[in-house]
Length: 326
Image (cartoon, rainbow, N blue to C red; front, side, top):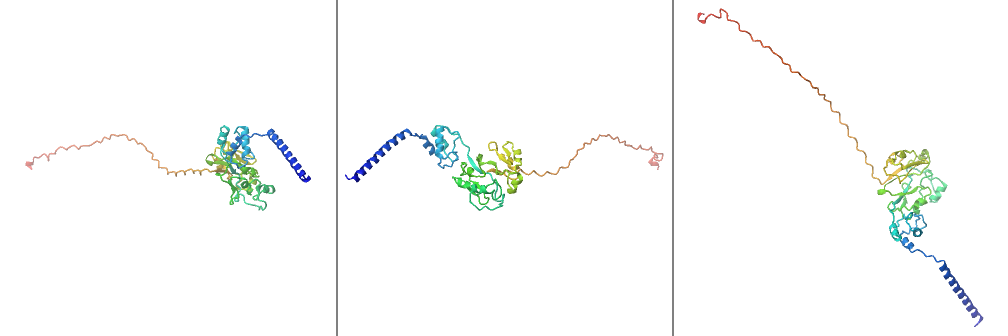
């Protein structure tokens, strides 16, 4: 063999030997550090939507599945995006409690009509960026900026910006209450609340913490912290802190008395039928004349009438002459 061929053969043998040694080492390392994955993780993950929205508090659906299998319980774990928790409970051999449906609500009523624009924003269309440089077109430092970060964050196409009002509108049929829009909003205008019986709920559509006069200066529908709603609520579900009223949905019984008392219309009652107006009181009939009945007792009086009968006069001598003599 020529020196060149010999060199090539030696190089091939050496590389082959190194490869064999590396393969043996990797084999034993894989055995030593082998991680046995519970097959239930894949089964649980199959019953999750795969949206990876983060509404459950984990990085994704598989991370939630791993947490459920590791904890071997469903307490504190739920998928707001539509995961089949009953099927997951069957896989785990557990019982799933009924979860109350949740929905996102927009707690801002600063529409173009209620909060007219005072300045024009012409920059990056991002709420995160806009909130760092100015208060907003209406000058309200707490109101919705309307740039649509919440729309981009929603993976279910359940929220859009209304061009007429400039505010986000939530589609209740599509919203799963994952909270992605609420986490994205820099003004914390969006809140996830229970959907309520028949989709009915009452909440304060304002997050402005300024004093009443300052709040009304920028928005005619702002909460002014007057406290009338809290005094009216018979269930003590409303508190007023930092010039802002808040309705505790765990105590609220949806009586709507607070909505009628709010002077600015900041309290919204959603999906309720219109209240029936009280029937008008019938016109009062003119009073009938009072007839006084007087009983008059007439005593019977016996009247004695004396009747005088004339006495016949005796006949005179002339009258007594016999007729034959005349």
